[in-house]
Length: 157
Image (tube, rainbow, N blue to C red):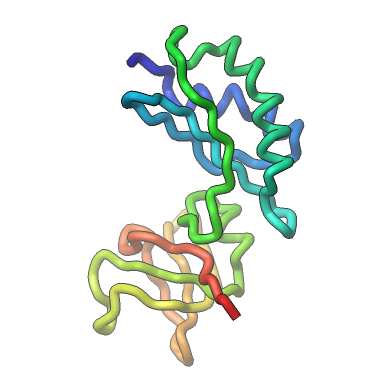
């Protein structure tokens, strides 16, 4: 199935996101027997994305997507969701929102014998592509190219 570029779809939905008061975290299109377009929403507000917000965005996005016609007339399902608590950081706002908080880090190659650890995010340099982390008494920098995934640490206490 021919599909318009995800960037074009995200750009078309940007005004809808602003109107609803959310940010678009990611847009994915999955081909197959049941093609689907999934829009993941985020918000800097406490409490995150709830079902009412997803529904409001879905209803506002429908006419925009009908006009854009991302699948050139072919049927697809529109899903609107939160990316979840364990989502990887992608944008500068993800890093800034989690500054001085505990994060989970998964590396491509072991550092001091560990490929997975928790630390506190102390800094983010988007120009240099580095994060500053604090683990115990040690403060160190890692380049984002060394990191498979960095996400918010989830405590179940």
